[in-house]
Image (cartoon, rainbow, N blue to C red; front, top):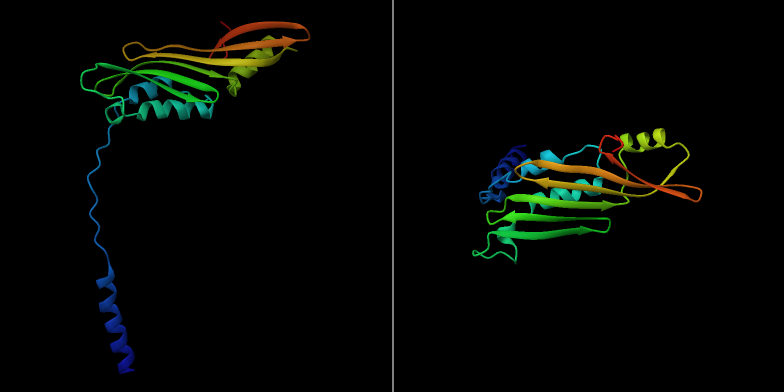
Length: 166
C-alpha cells in the first residue's frame, strides 16, 4: 500500500513537469470596413454574395503585393464564378466604394414571391444582382434585374431587394 501511495505521489509530481508554457503574440483586431458590411448586409442575399462581400471587407491593401507608399487609391477586383466586386481602397486600407454584380444567384424569397405574384405563368430564366456602395453615401443601388420568359415571349424587369417592382 505504501508503494502504491509513493508511486501515485511521484506520478502526481511528474505530470506538471511535462506541461508547456506557450506565449502567444499580441493580435490587433480592427473593424476598419464594418460600415460597408452593415450597409450592404442582407440576410436574404445569397451565400456567395455574402462570402465575397466579407472577403472584400477583410482584404488588407497594405500587405498586398500591389501596395506602394506613393499611391493614394487602390482598385482591387474580386471574382467568383458567378460574381465580381470592383473595390476602391485608400492608402490606409479603408474601403471607399464598390461596384458589384452577381449573375444567376438564388433570389431572395421576397423577390421570387413578388415576381410570381405579379407575373403569373412567367418563368425566371436569368437574373443579376447589382450593388453600388460609396463610403460617404452608403448603398446607392441594390437591385435585381430579372429576365422572364413565357412561351416565345420574353421580358426584363427590375426589383429592389424587397421585391418591389421598379
